[in-house]
Length: 120
Image (cartoon, rainbow, N blue to C red; front, side):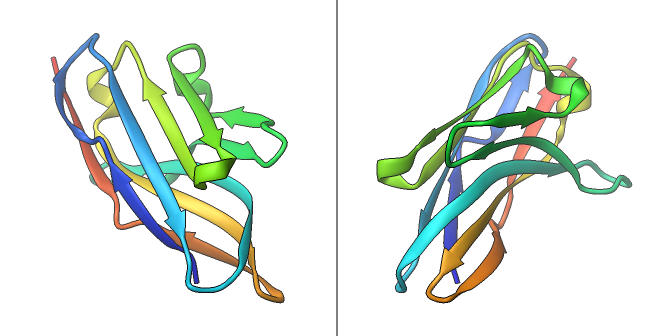
């Protein structure tokens, strides 16, 4: 299992920025395949926000393209989500996600989530 430690959520006003971080660790040998961020707003399903592969290929939800940037520090097993021009509709709990080879298996793990609230 891979443990994910998220940080960087908070309360901001519309138009402001936040940066989320997620550091992965494990007691076992592991190699991350993809890291990403999902979000879930009240009453809605969890949705993909952005994802990045080991070769830095990225994928974004249409709603955040041009405003959010995902990046990855492979040496630190850490993924970042820079969120600019935040809107009230970005308010949600943001979850870090990773798919990794752990030992001889491939596992998917989730962070505990960090609250992002954008006021109008």
